[in-house]
Image (cartoon, rainbow over all chains, first blue to last red; front, top):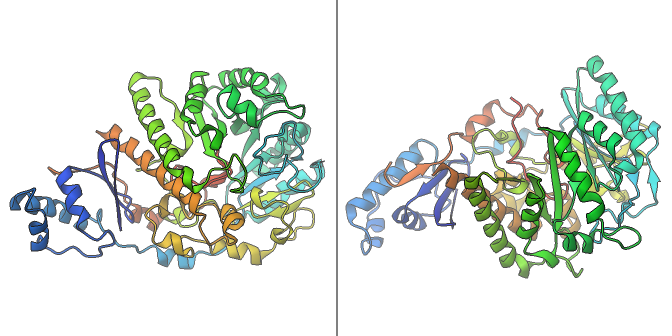
Length: 455
Length: 45
């Protein structure tokens, strides 16, 4: 299978199964249009009908020369390469649990209007996770992770810094067990920044592999969607804290992460605003919400969003040339040393190697399933762990999803977000159309940027 | 080649044979939390 597209003046051909990316000239692009994108075998000599079809534009020898170049790539396994990964997918079963999203707080000091967590409580009550539950979560993760060394724990909420003491104790406990169990904990935090102070900043800088700082961009955009309980916008109180934090963070990982909605489809301006504030690691994502809400992105918004992604990609390229570059999470792609094909068959690991734990100690497939009783998998307090639910997620590869099987992007998104699939399509195996279209566009932009830099 | 330039060197098929160690980051733990992108993760090997 190949995917051919034009973006920013480039003719790009992706060979889906090998991952090879080719930049081709106009005649080659036209010739490829005449070949079936799912072609399995190329003929050894240029078919006469191809020569005939292009005879009005290109002479016979040009067409033959192009065909022979394509044939060389085919023989090298870089064009129309076959899909032989299903044999690996068939053998994939349960993986050890290795990543945990710890909901240390089901409460929040902001009232973000698009919050998928329902103002932090996930349809339940306000609650802080106790130290006992948090430490049990560490024990649970170590016990269920046999065979894995690198363990991840993300402190999440609600607003996790409302329960900072438990975060500190949890990190301390996890570190104390690393040597004994031959594990390495990678802690991360996602915060809205309201409670960020010098003590917390020092701790996060020391202990967190990554810190995600929430901000939507321009003041008016951010404050419209991210007010506090009194209705006051959060921009002015958090931006100075983020700037200081990023200054002292050095070269350790962070992201300033925002959400765009129908209200700011010109979100490039928000990305650039944050870049101009001095943040160079940025992530701005489309809101995920019920389609009937006024700020939701709907199918008829897609052309506008696509144009905006193109615009952002072009600006990023320009900035790279002027030395003012920044990193945009969804345009990051590593074409040479990215994840292996096996990783790409099953994506985020939700429900299988990844789980979320709520303040009661209940275990769910991921943070987006928290609060839905039918998806409760167990408890870190009792050790219960539902292997039937785990099994469903273990068998949610790109070959188990009918839309993914025929999609050119399947080895980049790896089947998309199971939670979105479940929430909007009613089935973890049924791809959420809107998310897929957005993801494919972002991938096209990301690959274009790589191709342009290669030039 | 005169008409085609190949941008990358990696062939995914080679990674299938030696891959699957499971030590790389779960993709949702980075900066998204509401969408899934895997191709930007780093290989741990």
